[in-house]
Image (cartoon, rainbow, N blue to C red; front, top):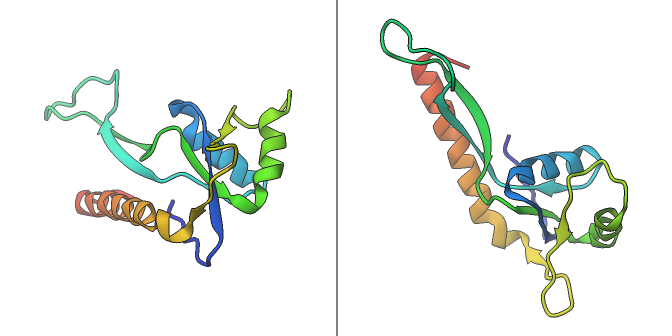
Amino acid sequence: MTHDYGGSQRWCILRTSGSRTLALADSLTKAGFEAWSPRKTLRRAKAGVKRRADGTRPMVEIDAAILPTFVFARARDVQTLAQVACADITPHPPFSIFRHGGRYPEIADSSVRGLQEAEREATATIEAICRGQGTR
């Protein structure tokens, strides 16, 4: 899944545990926030499965965060996100909003373009591999 966020809006940085990075981005997106964490799809041998007669093992695809622990969300939502982060009960994985010097720094769209390009390249690479193997 790739994203192309245009415009000159800004992002704030959310922090969570590495294993919850993509779950947080997906959960916030599902709740109507514009949230994103760069991801890539990895192909690896399926664990716990015996090798086939030809010596190969079945492959599985998993999504992985390119920057574990970091989720970007639109800065316009920072106050609402702060309330969500502090709530006793929330449907989202736990997170905090990155602060520096007593404020929430904002990141320009242009500053995340490199990450968005890395995500697109990772997606294109896995799709090319799958096409070459006749999968997908």
